[in-house]
Length: 298
Ligand code: PMP
Image 1 (cartoon, rainbow, N blue to C red):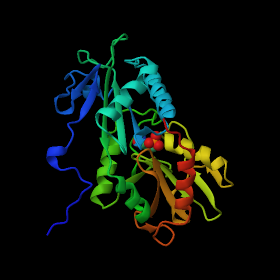
Image 2: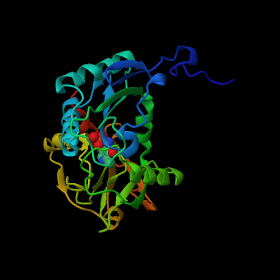
Image 3: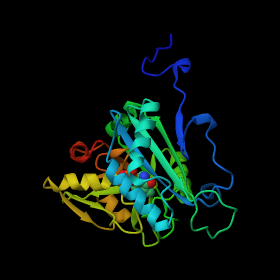
Image 4: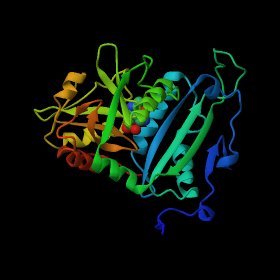
């Protein structure tokens, strides 16, 4: 007999999802955006992913700050007042009864006749959705560690902006997935590993120094990265912003990825390179605790 999974909501009891779309709370299935939205035609938009833990937002202030920076860099106007974002984001958590999961917030330059140059006083579009993440998904990945492949970094020169223009990331991630890995680390023309498709990349050297690519235009400075580093400063663990290559990965003691949904996750293999003994090392739990202590809930 099939074992019943009591933690999985049965179909009839599944909630209908609610999305916030340009001022209205709508049934997810009926939420639509105009065909001439510039996000659809030019990937002309930005986004944020917030982690939700016990129905609270993780590092909300830092995510909002990065959202406004991304909009500023692309000269996209905020569609709503800065202090009202929290109200709508919290409403999506409540209306969808999210306990552990994520919030996806996207802003595009809005609807205009297709033309590369953009109208200056364009009303931008906003969409906020939320969804549950199975609570044990992260735990399994943390315990087992993840495999990573490598891929050419084909992205543009402003990876510091969190734009929805993600085609190189999408292709690299798909390539990783086909090869049985969860993430791809991107390697630029100089042979440096910049970051993952959807996470920051880290190695722990044999001298116990933690290394990650410098925070510049070649990477998205993750909010998880920022909080984790804030936490590290309280401990006596050495960290250096340094560019690193595959040969450094080969010599690494441990390796990690960080992101809002993956927190700190150990990497056990990069292509054919086994990290340590092929199992998560002892720093994985230390680093996870450091991050968990440093994050802010709202
Ligand atoms: N780099 C890239 C390219 C990403 O897409 C992400 C996830 N959004 C990150 C890094 C990690 O960012 P965060 O910690 O804010 O989720």
